[in-house]
Image (cartoon, rainbow, N blue to C red; front, side, top):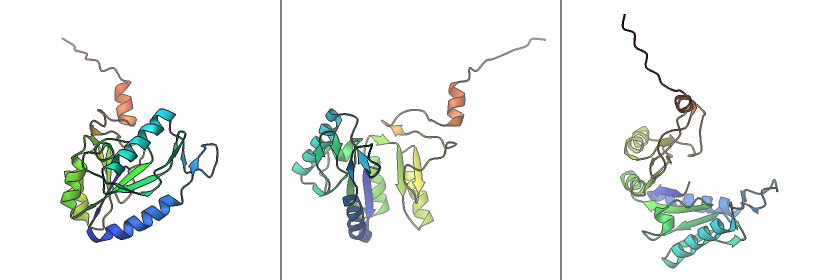
Amino acid sequence: MQRVLIVGDVYEGFRERFVAHVATMTAGSSMDEHTDVCAMINLVQAERVEAWIREAERGGACVLAGGRREGAVVWPTVLESLPDGARLDCDEVYGPVVSLYRVGSLDEAIARANRVEYGLHAAIFTENLRHAFTAIQGLHVGGVIVNDSTDYRLDVMPFGGTKLSGIGREGIRFALQEMTETRVVCFNL
């Protein structure tokens, strides 16, 4: 989850609870069982994520939690008011960074989600089944999860994205197809 699009009057309450939760998270060694977020794959990637955060700040974004780095560890970071075109706004960060966006309607949220060049998974949290189906039909992503996190997955579910989030699908059926050599046999009796 990199972008959270929040419709209307629930934004303030969501932001308050979300930021408070992120502020309780512990960053550090993956060998420490109390660590929520461990080091990135290497120092270069951690520095890249930090540079993207600084770029967003220079453009007017506000860091609500985190935003710091020590070595290869980047603290869980929450931002809002990202400028259009900032790398955190339009690229995949692959780091512990979440950007919050206030949107006026579901249609605006779908349009904003679709404007990035990536489309792995999306989630919608709603009590309105019509809104869920509007998102399902409108989002250009490989999977839409309704009322759960985008990391929800069962092995039987196809997994993959659209646009720059890859081609093809993972999963049992797709793995079997990849490991099967199709053969044509014809009889002329």
